[in-house]
Length: 432
Image (cartoon, helix red, strand yellow):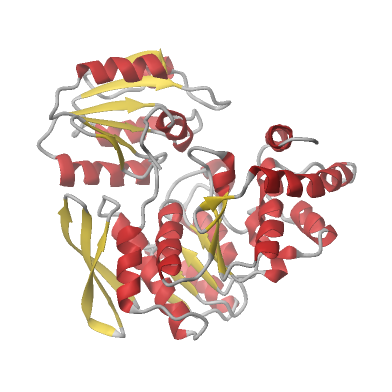
């Protein structure tokens, strides 16, 4: 393996091994590389939606306070390296190559055992742990890839566990009911490690509560131990009131990410940062927290990529995400004509996702993109409940066609899949 492109090609070649729940292969690789997971201080985040935004709020606040922060997120929007970042800077190509060279012979070795070949996600998890163990940031924030209990990131022992919310996604793997899905997410709760959650369904909370008691982990809930109340949607984002036992009257906070659903993610990040400060491990002032929160930006989450007319990309890829997107469109663009460009993976409940947008969308164009599980434009159109809808197979042609229809005051929302958003975002310039 002589170059970064060869390393990346090798990592991607493992994608064919798909999703293999279980930690045995990762544990085997970590044992052979000196257990790097034991050499980092970290936070672990699970949940159906909002993980990436919560990671970004925490990163922004901690960076603002002068701490170095590693992040492990998925999927990526521009480059694969984004998945492993330090202070928002993706791992360098030569560093990724260096760690791939360490891991590859071990992957080949374990593939010959009855454990079988590790997956792409398992390998990038191991690479990230080696990287952060060497770099030694003050804290690393790890986002689960899928579920929690059997997710390959669940080899870490964090100082704090966070669960954003519980919704219906990846049901074929995680279960058909909220209780089953919550059981998987609650799998990240470790013995004696506090957990904070914004999950709001009683059946999900019961599961999280039971697991926390079993693991002797103190748990903090939204609307019991802390709360967030939306104040207003502004041109620059959202304002909300955060309250807990230390700030009984509440503090007014601002975020630049649009969408009332974002205040829960921001509230979770604030509760996490306040917990870290109370524990004495970190020292973050209220003014630093407020500045860091306001400066947090998460690409692909209701991100305005062009103005007059406004073009927005949003990574909504399940029913909960689309419901949040709909509310954000109503709050910020309720009186305008909203055009939709939509592509999705065929294993998603896209018919239900589209149904949610009927009342806000003026015209919809369905398209597809180059990805193994992408639904065809015709498949999507066949399920469309939207009156003014049509399909164009090539997303580049579809994007140009829809842009040609727009008047200055119209809105174009591009959504349906994070992988699709990643592809589309590259065509817009002047983005970070």
